[in-house]
Image 1 (cartoon, rainbow, N blue to C red):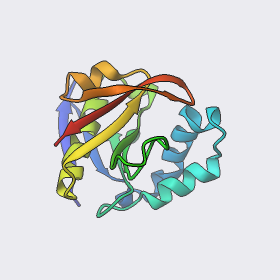
Image 2 (image 1 turned 90 degrees about the vertical axis):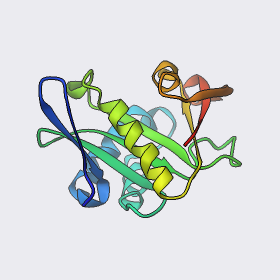
Image 3 (image 1 turned 60 degrees about the vertical axis):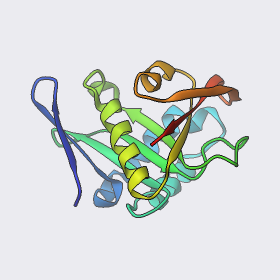
Length: 164
């Protein structure tokens, strides 16, 4: 098991690990994704659950990582072949970044992003892509560059890339 532990705010221990090692968290990840994005774009919980069941592996795409804060699921992030149907020429994608509201403002999102970048590099990828409606600043201050603006189901968004 390859876990990434990082002590942050108030000595909490955050573990970033493969969803494959925590299959009991597949429904949690699916409910987070469906609640945050799927219910607003015509998705279904079942479809989200299937996506995370497929993403419960560590040696290829799709890959999902989970953050565990003091034994509780705190967040997730995925590496997908595609996350924006208008740009099938770009791959792979950093996707489904979510931190539960009770665990925000602890640096978990940044830990997830950095670990996923390392995973993409381990798998042989040299670039990553993402679309964000709200978190452009988080990514820019961590080396991501905006490639342009796009429209998603949720509104105006930044299309971003990072060379690994």
